[in-house]
Image (cartoon, rainbow, N blue to C red; front, side, top):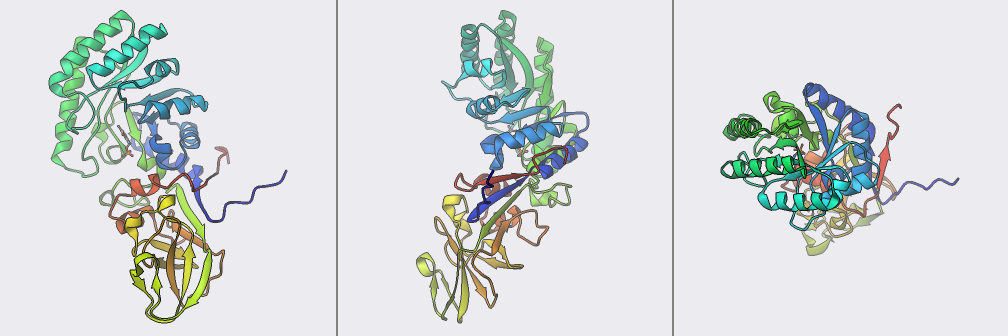
Length: 384
Ligand SMILES: *Cc1c(COP(=O)(O)O)cnc(C)c1O
């Protein structure tokens, strides 16, 4: 059998051994709660199916996605057990969700009407989880509308069209420890859960914690924690510490190869708009990756890379397919490895460094890496 050579232009190496270690570390932080591996948006760019599988191997017992299409794709790929999805839009495939045994979030009366209709068609009950808006102000049911939603869901449960498997919510400022909204949201959640339970709801799971709450707020763990970014080894926020300080190992390394090296004279403009001009005679290195691969153009002039053991910043504009670094006097050959970001253990920048260069958060840096970048999943075997 001939082996396909690894892609050289650019590749995202995904260390599933690191992901499993992160899942174990997060379970140790929330020992009494079950762990949901959040793999929405293709596992934050890391590949939803292999990441879900690795997380389950390391002890996660739930998998979570935003959209029903993402959840159905996981089920179709053979991911077993509990899969929950929470971002429903009218007309979405409720019946397919019932048939795939998904746990489906319901935030309002329109969704309860659609899911019960689908359950009657399917001839079996839907597993639903009622979502409370405890203060995030995004999806979820407002406290004032909660009694109506709870009593309608209980009526549907009595009629056999749904089983209410969970009560849940989401935090607005868990990445800012001590933010006054946190205590207010937890109090609102406890009240909304208490109301539903007093009315007769018997949820399997109550949950509100994302990664930052899993790491910093034990009182928010309840029965289940939903971890996304921390599972990928990225700190939810620099204020909470670096990955290393949090005991996490970054899972993605974005590596490329230098496509061209050339000497240019002083005063030479570089890339569109000539926002960079060489000060003296120098050597330019062409990095064959750009915003078409999910590299943020907003980081033009600032994006860091490691080439031949030295950091360089993008010289001038990041284009769709490429950008340039000024290698100065460095002796580099075409084909040399370029590390855009990774765990930092070889001296390379991290996703957080890129986030700072692009005025965004590290979540976006890993998630936006596009489909033109091949993923190379490493350490696939959990017993290695
Ligand atoms: C994305 C998401 C999570 C995971 O958040 P992280 O901060 O990445 O851990 C949890 N819950 C909901 C509802 C989400 O949308």
